[in-house]
Image (cartoon, rainbow, N blue to C red):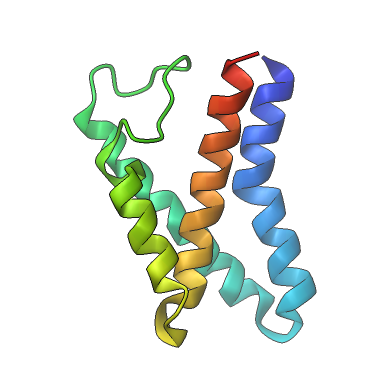
Length: 105
């Protein structure tokens, strides 16, 4: 369980921080803040019962984690104004998908 939590939260917080620092040196704090806004899609967990279930895969269970939403996040990459937020959302989806994959083992 500890490895799964480390990977999950590392992908949520550490990987976006590293990307912000290495690729956006001059404005890394702002970029990291935008990446962290991707966490807001977890508000859709409030629609589930129970709100948090450590053994539930979020991907395609919650509305903002659905395959349709993921397509929208990828589409947002093509527009300059939404590109950073799209990266933050996709980091979030990647972290949740890794958590799902690790549950299988």
